[in-house]
Length: 511
Image (cartoon, rainbow, N blue to C red):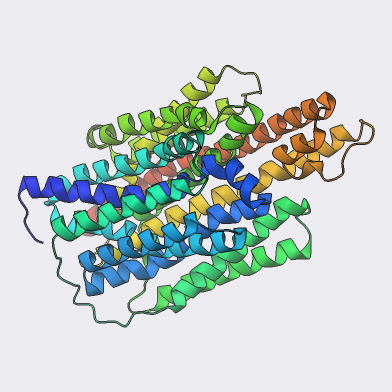
């Protein structure tokens, strides 16, 4: 491990903070621009979900190989290549003239983002003294959380200032260029791993194909409203089968890119489970809250960003405090309480209605973020501590792959449930009204546009969206609650194992 002065460590951490901000701004900054993007590119609900998911899908798939590339060829080189490619691909995305081109470029941006996220975490592990790694990871996690929350605010400010939807991506591209310059100057070289195993693309193909088929089926199921249709069931089943094949083949490989054998370690397994399910709930909430704030409540993009600002506040407060809480109460207890707080906040958010004071929404968003922040740093630190030395890049890649899988499925599943439930509620209510438009149920925006000055249809659409959002939020809260329960359950199993082992040792000694 290369020893750096404290001043140099601070500069490295700042640079890595910029790098990870680029990746996560790319994930969330488009959320508030979706209505403006829809006006110019005329996107459907399905296309909007793919514009978001193409990025996270490619991100999740290429995380596997990018971690191994970082270990083999050097973390600094991989980081620089990732930032350079990301800046170019994101800049091209900003000027896309069709949904198809935008989806393709978002996917390419996700490929390069995958070279940034795990490598930034691995550089921390390689360059910081063991006693300061947890603190550095907490700062890394805090910056990650802040970037997630600041994306909607910054994006909303640009849209409200009169810039076109692509301006939000131009900003991200410029920030990536700044990160590239800083990384070239500040980031130290790290010795490549001694592992000379050849890099394999088959796990990447399996990962992208499996997740892609799964997401495809889920989105199509929400769009069609018929979850039993073969065109919905077959992609989902095929996606699960491909991911299972990936797990089996990697478990048997001498030098796996996705070292699923780490999941046999209970502490690693529970940490990534909590991170994955937490991301599922929080990213799903970010997706549908955009439509609640802007379309149903009528706030501007910048106002929407301000309303979501408590998310940043919760993460800023919670992330730095979580290592201290974990040191005093234990990482498992901290993660369990964090996910319980997240579940409670989402449960209360399920009671939000169209005319609920927006301050109540903001307060619950703060609590939601505070709970999730208590999970990010301890969960990441626990998972990384279980990874063998020399495999930090691949280990952090697996952690981030599972996190991105949760985020991608959160948008896909909760988004599909939202619009499927919305259509169901709306069609039932519109059936009672004469001459309702048959295509009005595709989304809240489309329904309001078709309604024109018809107050009855507009009122029905708002009520249907409220019911759908409440139902969807309950599902998110349930997933978060399951994550909270999983932590003490695994801890109890581990205690019983240790007690049984101790009893056997005593019995052997006495015998």
